[in-house]
Length: 258
Image (cartoon, rainbow, N blue to C red):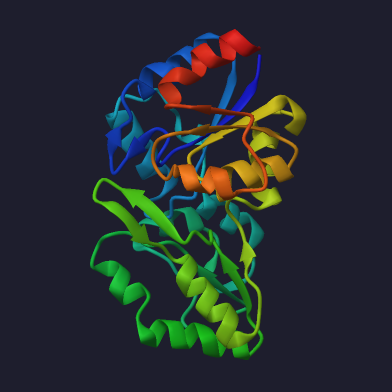
């Protein structure tokens, strides 16, 4: 039986609407004996809220099966004074951090959502404050560096643009805490006691899911939902081990091939 890491946004749902057949596919993966962990770069809500949302869509999932970037940040930045440019919904996952407005040890940049709050989080005032903290010696971290994310209305600009701007202005490089960082995949595999070479990553993001997992020694399945773009596959120098229409086809594909 395989250890399977499942991306959430774009694989299980898009903008809160479950992918057809996704809840049943997750049930079948469990029934077939596979060890499953849900890994997400979502930065718009806490793990507890995300768990509630997914259960409301029909997914049988416990909060402790979800790995969020906020939880990773809380472990990595424990004991540091942090200037956090993050959406308010994820603050519960940053429990234990000293979140401050200046004189920080670290600047943490989260992701975007479609609410009006994003304009306040990434205002010029806040971005300039982050720049000044970096100039004064603070380290730059980001929950992810995604360029965009997929919604029911089409692609939306994500916080990777702000991270890149701060890197350029402060002449520094951000430490990425979410996918595709090796530390993120290692934490997920440790949680289900799995070796990389015996594990699968199932995702819709070629760079964050497929390339990141392959660099960590995992096998990969790309789904044609969410962020999937055929040109990204054609232009990449690597290929996933498989491409399926959606997670609904994954249990049958695994049964036929392994």
